Image (cartoon, rainbow, N blue to C red):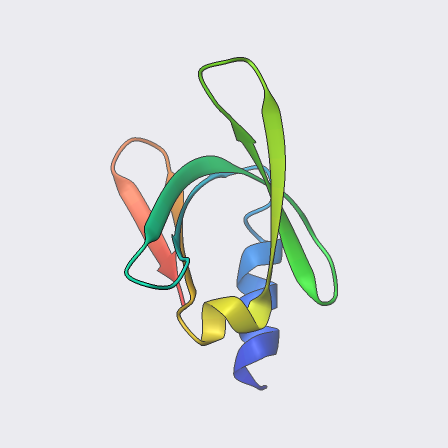
Length: 86
């Protein structure tokens, strides 16, 4: 099983859970967002992000973004358990 398929399988098992995204936007800019993993498609996954202004945004990343560490996904299970997907 290749690593992209493993990342996709791990993320598909976490749909509906809260995730913390740490995205590298280049030039030392790192954006950290918290949202809910909404759906996983064959080539990308979608995270729904709600902010303090009651607006909802959806961001999508590919599995290769996770593989190349452009995006770090941390799944929050309950109070203290956090699982990093890589």
